[in-house]
Image 1 (tube, rainbow, N blue to C red):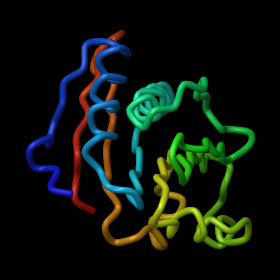
Image 2 (tube, one colour):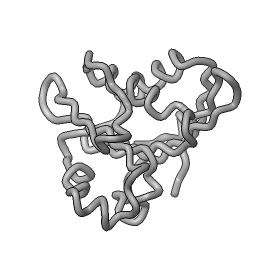
Image 3 (tube, helix red, strand yellow):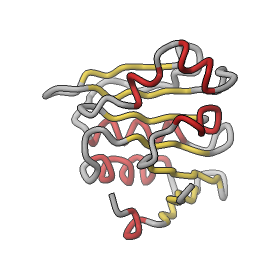
Length: 146
């Protein structure tokens, strides 16, 4: 996907971040992996909620910090995989639980929080989105090439 038209987005609220993610979900093809970079509290899970809504999911999306991965069945077919790798040491640990199956599912979408833990095994076409907190409610969302 050509992210040049979406290079940077300035959000002034959680609702605006969710709306951005919802629109993005309608633009990316199945099989897309999005690496969500950002500090604790940056808004990665807020982004995931909007993205899920954009895929037609009505379920409550929450952070998978303790479960590592949440799987959401899409209305037609496939899944949204929402992963939080904060507690994963490295790519070897991630491969131990079968992350390659999620990363290579061409019929689904994968959102990855703390992707730097597995940077060496991310697919080359992974979209990298950095979310930076710029104020109490404001965020900058920026696509980057890695």
